[in-house]
Image (cartoon, rainbow, N blue to C red):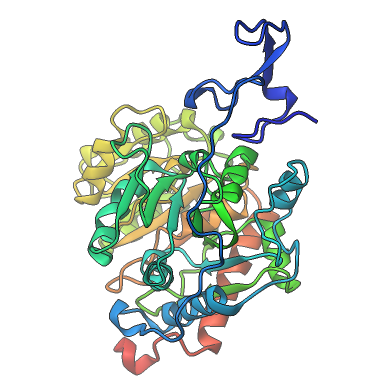
Length: 454
């Protein structure tokens, strides 16, 4: 079976043409990674060789105090560091998509000769994943190793770059994304979008994949392949997610994937548990003049308590009609019409509207799942309309619900699943959130009433 050695794509992503280099009429060219330059069957793929082939030896101990972690963050980070030093899971555990790809590519064994070296940090939304990875990076960099932090989105790369520079000022660093100035630096610490991992093979002792469940990494075998081949054979992959895919959750449950859970946010209050608000399907009322009374009542209650509102809708076509409807009822909501806006992936003004929302110039923002992650508002409530829609799976519902309760000053935000009927996804999201709260309570991570000032 022919495959591209750069991106792992098969025949279905290749085009055969007459080649001026080799003279054949059916020389294959990979179209999947063409943006990185032509990858032709008869051409050479140049690979660098790591100057150190032996496994990295990490020093024992190391203080966690300098990072200012909460008890839950500290415990999870310490477990991950222990795994870096000494842990090893059963071979071929927990990551079927890596094993399947590697079986097709002789010589590539991303999990190493000694078995799987993958670890999951399962942290609730707003748990402070960035702070938790600092001790892991410190352990690898202090031992002279190379570390990679990969995230699906360019905006996260730009946000993380100054934080990593401040935390590790002595380490050489490279920041890679489409259009970045850094290209070929052999840095100790590399921060990159997941697409950039195609540039590397067996380069890093530690590969950290953030938001592994997010677009475009989730469901893209090319990016999975890139992450696998960027790690050294004896290196370690640490996966970070608030909503790991179901196969990964099952692997954790069966003991096949080592995992540390962070079931509570830094402020040590329980996650807001969604409530269901029964509403007719959105298409029946969004384009009309009348706002459902039960929805209007709950919107008003949230606004009266000073919250800003995320109102999620399943489709872009619903955004503008709902904006117009809520503006029509602005006086009932005690708002100026200009305080209500909408945005989506096709909105050229999305960045400016998000800035206004963060500045509290907007009180209500109607949006799609494009804003299910990455935007944090200190005092916010969440309304998910048509929550019964199939596109709102369990992971999406958990992520959207995670926009509420992010601040220690307002940890008990309100979340509503507004739906015509309950779905398994809604029930699953509620179960997952309740389960994390139970774990946090059982482990003593939650503030008691005296600490909470109640």
